Every structure is written in structure tokens, then in C-alpha cells.
Image 1 (cartoon, helix red, strand yellow):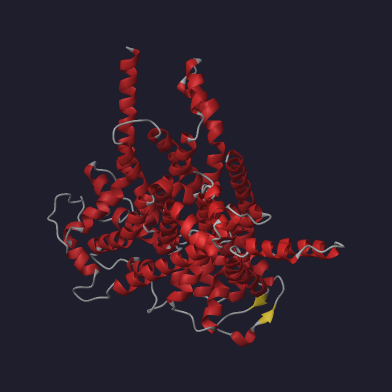
Image 2 (tube, chains in turn blue, purple; image 1 turned 180 degrees about the horizontal axis):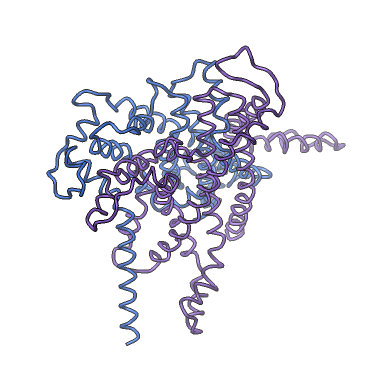
Length: 278
Length: 313
């Protein structure tokens, strides 16, 4: 009797969990459905769930029928995200080695210095960066964003990497050193292969944060180096019937993040909590 | 780095028999891999902040560059007495506290639900994470146009079925509109952290409590909640750090209008649109001081979790 009651309760809570998940996912599902509707079907009240499907919203977004093409912005975002992620890995991997395997003195202080920079609001450094970029002729330049995104993600990467590298068995590294391997060789040939899953997760999370960034991109870029989130700000004011287009745009721009996030799902929490939670 | 290096060098020179050079060489060899990252961070994040502090003491409108002059703490006086800026401080606090608390409570409920074994748990977890993986601007656009729109938004569409009212969500409750969109994105974040906390509970202890006849509520109240305390703190503080800085949602959903302008938006506006460099910098410094207060607590929490990890390893 008691076990039957428990089974019912367990099933009921499972159902509640499902419902919660569906409620949270509903806006995204609705966005996806709307993106495949025609503009007139997308703007009905009550909503039309069974309207005919079309790719018009996507055609509109990609500027097939005239209008600005989002491709330059998407390419800029990809460049800023990929290059800053590579630079982050290049800087954080050796740093993590010095903070987890062959530790410098006061390594915890160094770790917390990195973390504290993450707590400095980006908006506080915005103006000097803008003035510097203006004088150096680097406004509207994708490489400026690469540098800024690197500084934004480096603390996260250092924290994540050091917690991944701390799991590398020291004996393997000692063996390599006894065989006469130098540091770059040890890093590339011994440490990197072992900690590859951790490095991949770090890369994915840095990619997500760079891809999402709006404030710096909005202030420091113009027509040339505009990124995808800046392109999306063009949809802030209503332009008549444009719901399907907005949905298509939001979905396309979010796809890389959704892909990266699901790929890094298991390590997501570790990255978001700066390695504090495993 | 220099701070840690100088006493060491001083000690080495003060000693009658200086350390063999190979020893010092080895110290630097240990430091070498760290230096590029450290130097990069100092140059890109610390120097601009120093510049911000300096600029904050000048009366400097970018449209009248010849008029630039030192004004002492005038900008700060203006920032702290300007009703708009004061209001934005209040908005920032309200926005941050509301979003963090609500998403923390919702995140805890969802984490407790997801911590149980049931069919399709992995799928539900994936569905739950998805809102966090929508680009923030895209998420804000989704809420603004697709859900909130008074004429053809989903909310009013669904209300239509039950013959409910047709409110203009953003105009009627602007701050709530921004908060709801942020809660939707941040609940998954809290859920992930708290789920990790739930899964790190001592299973033997839970088993022992159950054998001793503790009820589910007692286990939650006296074992789970104390264990989760630091995960709750971590979620709250990390969430605060991100949401205090939120720009995307305010910028997209209300463009800072209707009394929703928070500090980051105000700073952005005062220099990007009003070109008041000195004022913007002073406001920026105020934001930083506010963040330092939060960050001090945050660092303490992270550091206690971190020490636990280190001692466990």
C-alpha cells in the first residue's frame, strides 16, 4: 500500500518536472514555430498553431528580398569568438599549469586576482577603452573585440583549466621531465592530451560568452565590425509585421550558442561557477 | 607579481651567501608560463579602470574638448544627487535582488524535481537549460515582441482563449517585464548550480537518516538545506555580479525608458549619447564600488568552496 502510494507520488513529481521543463521551453518552441509561419499568420490573436509552414521568415532575415544581409555580422561574431577563444586558450593553458601542476608561490592569490577582475563591471572600463580605440584608430575593428573578449574570458578559463589540470597525474609529467622533455613539449604532448575534454569545455564556454556579448560590441563597432548581437538590436523597434523575421533571426543567432552549450552540458556548471562547483 | 617577487629578491640579496643563480632561474622558470596571462589581464582590465578614476575627476564633455578641466569631486556630487542617477541606483538594486531571489527559489524547486529519478530526466534537464543558451539580446527580443506584444503576443493570445484581459505588459509593468525575462534566463543557471550541490550530498548520511526514520521534510530541512547553503550563496552572488551589470535586457525591452534604466544603461547613455565623459566615469566608479561590496562576499564564498575542493583533493 505504502509502496503503491510512493510510486504514485514519484510519478506525480516526475510529471510536475516534465511540465516545468515544458513551460520553460515553451517560449523557445513558440519562437521556432513562429519563425516558420508567414508574417500574417505570425501576427494573429488568438495565435494560429496550425498555420502553413514557410521559410519566408528566414528568407527575409538573410536579406534575400533586399535589406541588409546578416552574413557580415555573423562572420564578425564568429571571428571575434573563435580568435578570442584561441587566444584565451593560448594564455590560460600555461598559466593554469603554473597554478596547478608546478605551482608558483602564492598561487591562490594569483587565482583570486584573476577572479576579482571578473567582478569589475565592464561598463566601468568602457570609456577609457573607447577613447584609446578612437585615438589609436581601432574603433570599428574586430581585433579590438578579440582583445576585450579575451580579457573577459581569461579569468573563467584560468579557473576552469586549473581545476582540470589539477587532475593530471604528476607521475606522468615527472616521467616526461626525466626523459628530458622541455616545458612546451610537456604542455603540448603530455598535459594537453590528458586534459583535452576540459580544454574543450573551457573553449565552448568562452565561445558562448564572446558570441553573446553586446555592450562592448555596441559601443566600439560600427558598420564594418558589427557583430550578430548588434545586428539583432536593429529589431528592437517594431517594423510592422516582422515577427517571423525576428524569430528566425533570434533562432539563427542563438544556434551556435545552443550547439556549444549542449555540447558542453556536463561541464557547463563548472564553467559558469568559475570552477568552484564540479 | 612584482609584489611577490620583491621580498624574495630582497631576501636573497640580504643574505650573506646569496642564493645560487640557478635557484632564482628556476623560480622564474616556474613563473614564466603564468606571466603572459597575468600581464595581459593587468594591461587590459586594470589600466582602463585607473583611467576611469582619473577621468572621473574632470569636467569633460566630448563635444567641448577644449573645456576639459579638473573639478575634484564635483562629478561624484552630481552623480549622487542627480535624481535620475539616484533612481537608476534604486532600479539596479531592485532588479538585481528580485531577479536573483526569484530565480534562486525557482531554481531550487526545479533542481529538487530534477534530482529525483524519473523517465526522461535527461530530456527535461536539456529543456530546462535551453533558455540560458539563447543569446541575451535574442531572448529579450523574444519576450518583447513575441510574448509581450499587446496585439499579437503569445501571452495575450493565450489570455484570449480564456477571455482574460489584454494588458500592454511592457507599458503597464515595465520593470516586471524586464525582470520576468531575466528570471526565465537565470533560473536554469541557478538550477545547474543547486543540482550540482544536491548531487554532492553525502549519500551515506542521507541513507542513515532515512533508516532512522527521518521524514522527507526533516531531511530537506536539517540535511539538504544546510548543505546547500553555500551553493545558494554562490548562485546568489554570481547571479548578482552578472545581473548588476545587465545591459542587454534593459537596452532591448524598454531602452531604459519607463523608469527601468539601471546603472550600466545610465553610464552607457551618459557617455554614448550625452558625451559626458567625466560624469560617466564617476558613475562607473560608483558601479565599481557597489560591485566591490558584493564581490567581497562573493570571493569569500568562492574561496571557502575552493578550499574545500583543495583539501578534498
